[in-house]
Length: 548
Image (tube, rainbow, N blue to C red; front, side, top):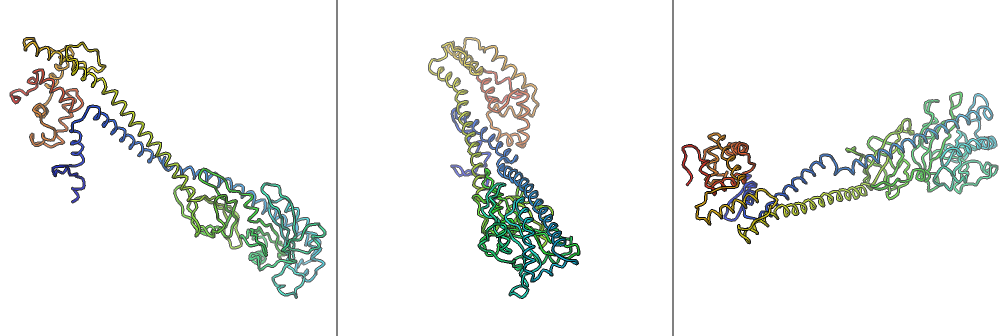
């Protein structure tokens, strides 16, 4: 039954509630020091429990989450600001380069009404055009922190060649020997374009060089070429594999809008995965390495496979494709097929790709590594609390020993030396008063009762005040006091007086307050001493003669 869950069986087959069991333990005989030590230890445990509850309420044990949130916020704000400044500069440079190339085409290459298709099958004109735009591309690449620069013209050197429908003339310069920091060791390679451009400008040919671009490898080409003039000044193309290489890169692409509303082609910049990882290295924190990611976002999914990943430190994100996230109290939780990460992300205003998806920047940290570090911090905190409790327990033992020592010492002296010795003060007034009282009783006993009973003035005055205060009790309170005089326990009084336990407790509080005492044990001590002095009869109710 339910009621049996709160009971404990004790020898003899009795069932005791938890409260009754505590009273049973309290009633057992024991030394003064052991009981005082028990009370001190209970006080320490209760105080420690309250302290732990307060710490939990204040969130001290979850301080790791708040600290991680703060670190992630700081890192995200820094990366977001740096990324926005960098993207704005690259986008501005791309638009400026597009305007200069468009002006070059209309002023020096094309004839009115400026149709780029008039350059089809004109190898010499396309070669001269590439040589003319080379300084523009090299200058733009020099002042932007990018790994490549390109321009594509909507024309081809041979419209009859196989695959000519998706082949376009243009120029593509790439940098090699990338390094961290602002300075690049500028080793330029011609990746796409006429080899005469490389010879004239004394740069190397890339080992994966081709004469023209294969626009089938650039899925954003047609969306920009078919767009209305002025509606799409630039876009970011998600990460692609650079044709015939092991490298991947994201691209900024700006259309070459002519004055007649036609598109002459595209130009823009390449930011390779290698360059981005060098520019955004992993940041060490007390919870592990923080990794920065620049990627498109689709609903609750971060498209990691289409974005750029910064330096990874101890985290491996290369195998992860898409990260789905859930918002939690202090940060977000990101999950993929290969791992779990904690972090925060935000959108970068104005940055979209050819599919209209917004791009953002995220800061991630490994769940496993954070969990390990946070668990270590909580363990240290709990260990500190444990050490605090142990120190308090030892302090309780020392304090109880120091408090009990003079009492035990005086009792041992009384047993050894008797009552005839003149004792010095023990430092505890009650013990000194008891010693004086026992001396008087011993003296009275030795005189055969012929001496007049007397008490030390301070003890006599103490008893007089106590007896006088009993006169202030009500009839009901005197009844309860009478039961205590006759030796009854509090648990027996409700049945004897036909009242509830709550009423008994209420009378007890009133009795203690009026008599100037604080506990049942103090009341028993007064009653015992009054009985030994022959003054217990002074406490009887008027008309009662109950004490025998």
